[in-house]
Length: 357
Ligand code: GDD
Ligand code: MG
Image (cartoon, rainbow, N blue to C red; front, top):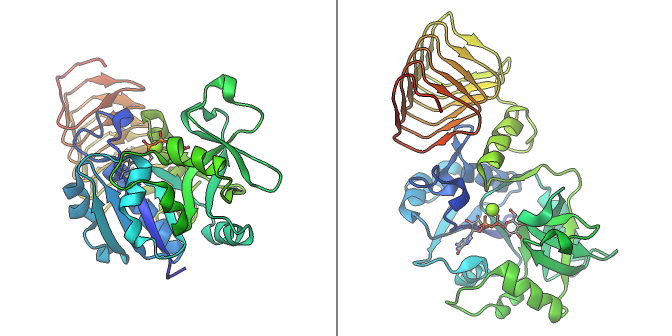
């Protein structure tokens, strides 16, 4: 695997995750206190792939300042920056010089534990030019629906199909591709182009060797929406992701507490709960299951949190009660406020005491 490179598409704006993505590119959105993209890097390392190309567009400097050359993560990262988004196909074409031989391309907003070696064996055994990892879902309308024949050959690809177009097959494009460089001849340079809407239909017309690999019992989630973002937290805390060091059950007795965090003896913890570094948790705070608190947060007396995702540098004043919500970094929640399920606050919010959201 060492000679294989991987292109990671991280140029999207993450519009459906707003307001979380207003100041933070989706790739840097924290997932259990680690940037989303760091999970993907860990996965590549686990597969012995160290040469990564980040295809970026939106807020590229923020990504560079976190991941740099990759040395901190034990990988080598090259960056390709688009001025304007070129679409998934255009972005891949822009990375053409890195396609020296078989190359992996992935969407940078998915979490999964795919066995890449099996997929690669499959790709080679079929003499495929491009192979897509497939995963079954109940509702394929938010994804790319892929129809295959008995041999695994792709016979239909429909991006965001309507229910009328969905038949019995429910396999969707999981956003992981193995691509032979010859496929790039179908994409024009410096033109906006969607891999899913423009190139895949053309490959079908041209009868290219185009296969789907149905990964057996793979964990997979696309973090495109608030609901999925919350779901990913719950899944990770339940240990559903298994194959990188972050994905292992990393907490003791269902609770992980970061370095420098001070807890009052009277804090009540009902895990799974994760607390970041250098936080202060005061008397009689209750942290109930599936709560994740970022770094440098201050949680005052008598606060109750359940299924909450709290980003870094948040202050929650005494007596506040928060359930099932997401609070962006550097926000301040006034005392005795009540914030309920589904609320998503972006960064730097100031909520007055006794607010009811
Ligand atoms: N560099 C670059 N330039 N990257 C882009 C661009 C672009 O213009 N547009 C999108 N991307 C990146 C996004 O950042 C994301 O990581 C990935 O490409 C996919 O784009 P999304 O906008 O998240 O697409 P989607 O989730 O609606 O659908 C895609 O992913 C599904 C699986 O998660 C499609 O590939 C579907 O077919 C697929 O099922
Ligand atoms: Mg997506």
